[in-house]
Length: 349
Image (cartoon, rainbow, N blue to C red):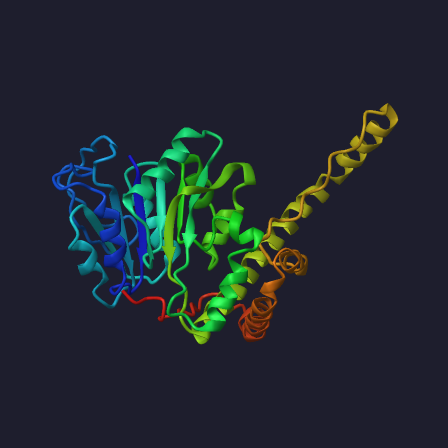
């Protein structure tokens, strides 16, 4: 049975449009994901109540198993979510997406499992397509839908920025920036082991090798972009800070790995000497560089060679990048990785 976990912090204005879209594909009278499914509330990790324990078969007409985790909400998010049939609501006092995701895992009933941001829109059929992709390809551990960016109503600089951003190879191929990721049970075990990070979707995407992840063309999610330049810069500052945090974490992990390797250096040197003496071949390669989704100047040059008309948009893209880098510098230096600069212009239900 497919489960959907939705972390939500003060998303009263938009949680309804997501839940209505998820439930719209369920015919009236379709069985619920479990008998007596209802809303529940709790006060912490693993707390909360959910009526019913019998799990129905995961059919195309069954209501999806949806868990909304309201974390530190001070608005009507929980009330909005609980008003939808078949939606279980769990409330925790701490405003933490990481804690909300893990709390959702405590209550979710099955796999494949989708993690969906409250401010995007995805339909029931798209959920079925993603689940089907995982069920049909054992090599895949994680998938995500194609993203749609409705740019009508956005300022011209915002539109120019996304004309470039949406064409970048890492953006097109990565699972991040979509607000939705679906995983198998094995994929869940991998992302559940990740530490709390601001760039949770980027970290989740990079946790899977290219052959283990896929952007599924038959599924779509609507990701509402910021409408104003100011809100775009907020997003880019957040991205710069969260990427720095992730890279620092990767560097620490690599350093710990190197330390462990040095402790075994004598054995490695002996193995190298033995291989050279026996003519067996090259020694094993050292650790690979950590995966990254940063945009390089080579990416932009390639893009311009292919589409020269994008030059004005590339200038805007670079302006946003430089501004965000400058404004994120203090937070990175001070290790301020807990401040979430949220844009409100994209949250218009």
